[in-house]
Image (cartoon, rainbow, N blue to C red; front, side, top):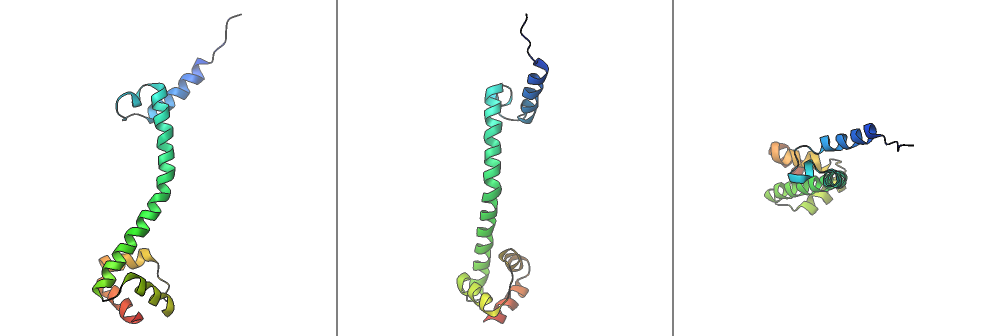
Length: 114
């Protein structure tokens, strides 16, 4: 009895991943094993970097707040401590946006907590 192999399904499975690796360099786009490994590793990087992105943005906001606070004669840590003590609940994202796009509003917040 001849061996039965489902070529339709296996070819479709390979074709789906090879379609996802279009645009990659060299063998990464058309050699099945290389393309599959590259695609899987790409998913790992994507998962990791969705989390790293949040850390990077928080770090950027802190740097911006610190730079703006120092123009007002305060350090970042002193400013955040004063905001907390004054009961002003404003997150770093909004505070950094004010520091960059609306310095007058940021200055007003700093004056309020001084």
